[in-house]
Amino acid sequence: MSLNHIRPWRNIYRRKSRQIMVGSVPVGGDAPITVQTMTNTLTTDVAATIAQIQACADAGADIVRVSVPDETSSKALKEIVRESPVPIVADIHFHYKRGIEAAEAGAACLRINPGNIGSQERVREVIKAARDYGCSMRIGVNAGSLEKHLLDKYGEPCPDAMVESGLEHIKILQDNDFKEFKISVKASDVFMAAAAYQALAEATDAPIHL
Image 1: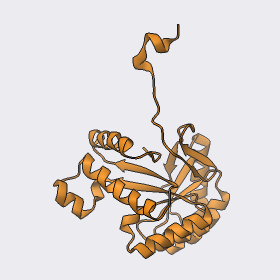
Image 2: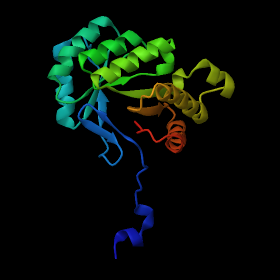
Image 3: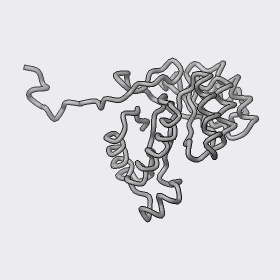
Image 4: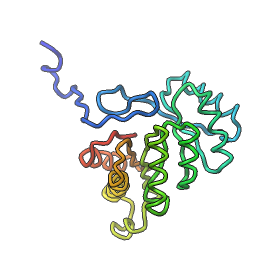
């Protein structure tokens, strides 16, 4: 008799999610759980950033996130992507032009909250660039930077507010027929984060980034 029948509390049942691609790496669905980390070098220091990405890859990272806060960083990203042994996620810091530049530079994924980058036209421009260059996206909700209307509604950061924020961003992408996204709902309070992720997992079939 298998151990699964003797000790059912040891069974692990994976949530069924859609699968997306981050470059050559499948995320979600029945793909292995992937490990992502991020650099803390100045992106404009190409050599140092590439060296850190290589070290992360050597340690087992499947995907690495790189900060792209300005146009100079966008230009550096092109060389970084070319030299990187793993797919690169570009964190564009709420600036839609950085998202377009990062897609053009070869980023595999954009870390973006579509509701925070301005007009619907800007959102459409970023989505078009993502489609044209084969980028996926990560919606990244943070308890510390929730939208004002949600803080007014809930009074403070809480799991329900985080999930509502995430679903609002998801709707923007879905309204533009873009489905290649994963989502995170992070909080420094571990219990808040766990509760938000549990609720999010029931609310969407998108791959979840922890």
